[in-house]
Length: 584
Image (cartoon, rainbow, N blue to C red; front, top):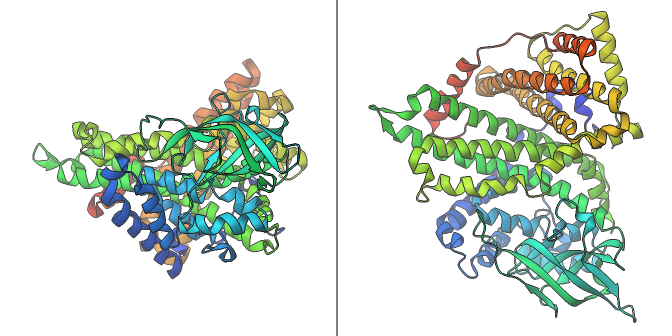
């Protein structure tokens, strides 16, 4: 583990392009898994989307069973417990392909992610043996019950209570959970409750338990084919051996599961956004106005190009992070009974990157589906066109797995916490940057210089905010949000650029050409956005002469040559239109 990059270290050091994982590194096995998962979604899910959206009785269970037959439900489950035990790139590929599956992506994600990973990572041998084989095959359906009517982002304020029976054989659970995916059909619920009203804990609750019931289906804006209901617990007797992990340590289970859930939601977003771009590009090629396909019009070209850029950047971030997670897993000994907990601890190292992926990917998806509707014009507002459903379905992504606001707060506060522990050299790197500015030794050369400029902007502003507020910075949410946005942009633009550089080194200029164009377009547009965020933040920190000095420092670190972004986008749009879909 000591040789692996620490979470967040990309902000403080250079990364060799050869050290990141990209989709160009897929093995033959990865490509086969991609074909299998994508084929399943096309043949089994998209072909029956109308039935799914109409909530056809039993269809979700049937589809989960079919996914189980192909090994798609057990990718994170050890073979000893009936799973297919795939690497993290393979599980990412499955999540990406499921992103095209609309509401079924939520059903399958609830099954393979939050509905079963608490048992995979924190369950005892007996718990895993009892529940995981059924999860893998789809014979058992899992659900995750954390949210309550009065406790969403503030999960620790949950009111659901667990009291140990006098004979010590059962916990008696009482409370209500809200917005529970798969609740109508779940055989297993991971339920969070407070033992004696104060020890936040996790339990495995059987769906047929006496006193357990579900409320009416939520009437949702999107993902209509998935089940979302309240879960009601009235004196539900849960065997004491169904306590998950340790009493009073449910937060450890919840937060570790959310890291992986955020990452997989980002992967879902990649698949969903590719699908939206494919629909928009095909429509733009076919739809004629003024005697020519609308794909030939400049403002439509810009939309297609920017949609493709966002997909490329998101894909680059997601698989780079997948590579980090896979390398981490390979460095750990997860063979013992506590192997799942060891894995969870390893994944936690990249909690920062998981949050960054979640925010960027879900907002990129929002942009892509919105522009997809716009390209369709009036038809995009009609439910007869698939893009209308994609637009509605995408909205929940920014709320699931911790809202994007919560994740934005988490990103800089995680950096602060790790800096305090000495895990990352935050203050040291800021001090080094200030010395360089003072000496006038900052020189920017090419795109590598632009990537470093982005990091320096982030460090300069973070350092200025720390100087003013110290540890109290964690209470300044508006500033935290802007720092998060800057940090996310750094990870995004560096991931895009590193992927293009790796392709150039390994595949040559012709193969790398479109990736380089996308990376350059994003890099150039991002630096302007970063500079704006930096100025806005500095103006909130200081004024007068101090502001003037800091703005001068900012100008020194942002000095770069701007490329013709319009021409770059035209190049990208031409490639997308020619192929009628996302291509790199």
